[in-house]
Image (cartoon, rainbow, N blue to C red):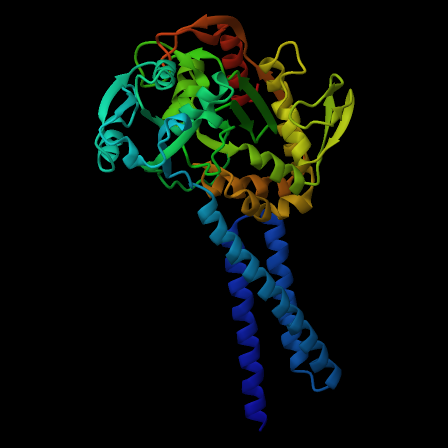
Length: 474
């Protein structure tokens, strides 16, 4: 009987040591606890296990009871830690490097007044298309699988649509991103058109998995999509273009914003320049390369965010306080009057504030400043609140359908680890580049003139110098 009792005690001790060892392995793989906390954590587990084992061998009843209580606590801690840790690891493996597929959605459109309702209604009818489309051959092949048409090519987006209205063609095939462009020009565009058929073309990218052991200064490109599409993996215009320059050693974050109408040479495209927002139609990699060309810098990673992500994130952190430089009635949230000075904003208000341009004489130039304020206030709240930092997986889970990124999980876990290790505050700096107003032909509309902003060369030079200074810790 004594030997059996001894064997049971040894089995319990080894089982609890194994459970604790597995917990340590999971937390180590999660890689968010700073070394000092990890050592304290391991030491505490060792002390509890040794103490419980020692008490288990006492002949007195109170020792066995106390040992059982300690082992009960260890079991609860282990189950919670292992469950949380493994779920977080699984999520992080999915939540980052999740931009391996970009999708271009095409629509065969006609006018409602034509009376067509399905794609077969345009059999042998005239179909217009843009000959500058980056998926032209595959696009036309997929159209021909559905219907036979008399195709007519265009190089100007607006001429294509104007000919549809003028009945020179009876349908057009168009990238969804261009539909947003036309909607800005024609107020009743979405009311007038009917979609006869929708299809997707996928672009799969190879993203190299890299293990990162130490955070180095880097540039991250943030692309904000204002598309009506709820699928953030779709290619779309980039209405928010911002470079985050992060130096984890000096605890400095520089936000550099670029106006959406900046007139630039889109990377990989020849001929006329275009608005930088249109680079996103070719994919986020093209937007990144275009900005790298413009500023002569390297961008390590990118993240594409849907506008709804602003609402979700701000609400998750409990709202933010933003200092408005003037009082105005919100255009995007009728009935809300923004006060001059500090305004507490929930997610919906923060988004309305970030989109506001009609209240300002400088329009989009001032909207950029609002966007920077919202981002800074949100990041500051995350960085100074340990409770939010420790719930970062919950934040990301809620936002996972609203962003795409090629940032590796190691970057995020190292950011959390470093911040938990040293809760020093970060210095936020912001700047934006500007330009002169002009009306010029663009790559999207070569036969007509549209509003663009000609970059100021001095602004570009100063921004490049500032970015390099932050990277170098100067």
